[in-house]
Image (tube, rainbow, N blue to C red; front, side, top):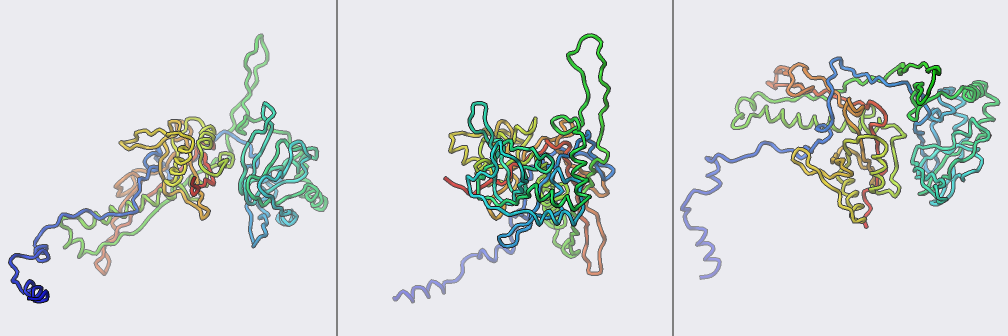
Length: 468
């Protein structure tokens, strides 16, 4: 008998038992609830202290502070040419509050573009400060003389920063530190002589600069707040100073933001296919999960109240070597007291782990709700995949103090909204339309507030793609 005959004989044998495909028609399968890849750990929502905002708006009252022009300057790039947006020159302390568009346009046109290679000295300590430098792209180190005569890095500047602005008000200003390019830098330079030439023809600019020079410097503490007059260590019967604590005249108010969607479920599905799992319940569960993911994304990235956008410029630091090193994490911690947590993209946490491995360091881990979370100096580093990664493979690491009592960062919500299923999250029945489709309005209200500027810090431009 040939092989072919054997195969045909085997196929022609009568079936002796029920096949599995037919048996499944009568079997009750063991099944999971619907799964969803989008669900993340959402540590920010879990660790942020939430404040109930019954009026829909949260006002942050602060002690009066004097603005010192610590914003960032924005540029426009066309090919290899970079220009500054004229209105952005108002970020310079000497031009703060000046709004003559034609004059600002003229000053923007007089900015000269210069390129510096890594290691080049842009401004040298002790030299006359006759120009304002606007850093369009690159990184610059501010280098001063240490206590033992060696060079000490005083800070790192990156895209959007400026330095030398005292030159516009003080003709005798000198450089108090050396500015040295760390990477290739594109810089716009605004000479003082150009500002003086424009001021000769513009009475408004001339008057503005003169008023800035003549206004007496307000007495402030190191945080820029109006100083409270005190006396200490005195003896006898001297006059005790009189004082009061002044408040900001127009404090910032945070309105609750909203995320919404309309969930639709056909009545036929809800009526006939509700066993063993409730179809409407599962649809709502996954919709709520997606809504919470969007909520965390907004708390990180929203331009109005998101953490990355609302961090003050003087609380933003740059990594000294690009990668997130233990030194950079220490610097981030020194900017605030009682830091409660770090937030970092998982790939940034991995990059930090590689740097620790190079130095022979083993970061500790702590237990948070039964989860082992990596920590640095006792502060947990929570993963957050909502922190963006740029095309240049850089990201940010957030450090913050939380809670109202500690003047930290707080989440805002309003509990007790109609048809609430969780605090500040509701599901409202909207009726059934002519196509027999049930509709539910799913709504979440939320926001976040930074009570004082040093509650929130960001390590920017962190490289995550460097190995070895």
